Each structure stands twice: as C-alpha cells, then as structure tokens.
Amino acid sequence: KQEVTQIPAALSVPEGENLVLNCSFTDSAIYNLQWFRQDPGKGLTSLLLIQSSQREQTSGRLNASLDKSSGRSTLYIAASQPGDSATYLCASRSNTGKLIFGQGTTLQVKP
Amino acid sequence: DTAVSQTPKYLVTQMGNDKSIKCEQNLGHDTMYWYKQDSKKFLKIMFSYNNKELIINETVPNRFSPKSPDKAHLNLHINSLELGDSAVYFCASRSEGSNYGYTFGSGTRLTVV
Image (cartoon, rainbow over all chains, first blue to last red):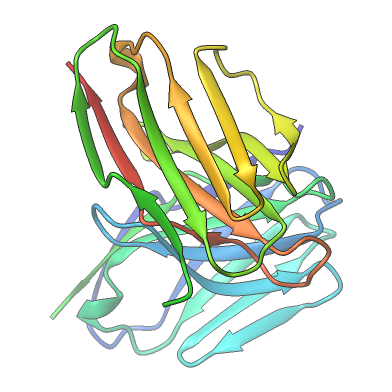
C-alpha cells in the first residue's frame, strides 16, 4: 500500500531564500508524481507533473525532481516570495489512476 | 472558462439530513473523482468514475452515493449526515491515458451541526 510522506510539515523562511520541500513514497511503481499548491480555503492548483520516466520538471522558479529508486521527490523553490506562502502537496499516481497524497508542507515566506 | 466547478461552495446542515454536491467539468476528461480533505488537511480518494462507470470505490460508508449522469458530471449524494462527515470535498478530473495530471475543483466545505 502506497504511503506518501512530506517533510517538514511546516517551514518559515525569509523572502529571497531558496528552499526545498521533500516528498517520499514507499512504492516505487508509480505512474507519475504531481505537486500541488493549496491556498487557505481554496482548491488545489497543479504546479508540476513528473512522469515516472522523467527525472525533473521545471516551471519558472519551481523545479521538481523524481528519484524512483529511492522513493523521493523534491520541490525546489528559488528566490522565494511572500506570495509563495501556501500549503504544498505532493501526490503519487498509481497505474489505476488513484492519487495518494502526502500530508503537505505549509510554507510561510516572511517579507 | 475551462474548469472543474463544484456547487455549492459552502454547505451547513443538520445531522440526519440528506444533501448533494454537484460537480461538472468542461475539459472533456474521461475520468472524474471525489476526494475528501479532513480537518487535518489530509486528502483521500473516495470514488472514481470513468465514462459514467464506477472504477474506484474506497472504503466509504454506503451513505455516500456518487452519481454520474454523463461523463462531464459527477455528483455526490450523502444520506443521514453525521458530524464526522464535516470536511472539504473536492471533485477532480483527468483525461484517461494522457500524460497530464489531475485538475481539481475549488472544493465544497460541508459542516454538519
């Protein structure tokens, strides 16, 4: 049974810092891995999707990596801004289409 | 706007009532889902439909009954609501067999009093 864990649960950084959010999963037989952002009281916004055959994906200041052999993914945020403050969720997708979510990392970027 | 839209956004109701949440997607996706986010913000899948057929049914009380009249709609009906049903319910869709990920609705916050 797939389990997804995100560390840390919460993170506070000053504006301008580069930071890394971690996601680990127990079953390496994933179809893909998706990173989402959730603002308080809002829905989920997809940030990056990494297929199982890929090693990383980039979008603007965001870079997500995937290492299936070690069961890890990271989300790198460069030059963080207060607007980046949100909860970041990673989710692995199985071949059946089911998304298994981590508990999320709540990020606060202080001006 | 192309999106996954849910109604209502907020729902407050008394224990024992029956309520429905509606979901519609205009993305042309084949598969739709219901996820529940509990008070600890943990998201868990409830149901999945592909072209109006149920394909995933997690261990959910049978008071919860999804209905898909067509592949663009997946509604969630809940009978005899209980306090523990209070949560945010998210609808999502995905194109089957594609390399694209999920698109989520903005959620329905259900509060049972």
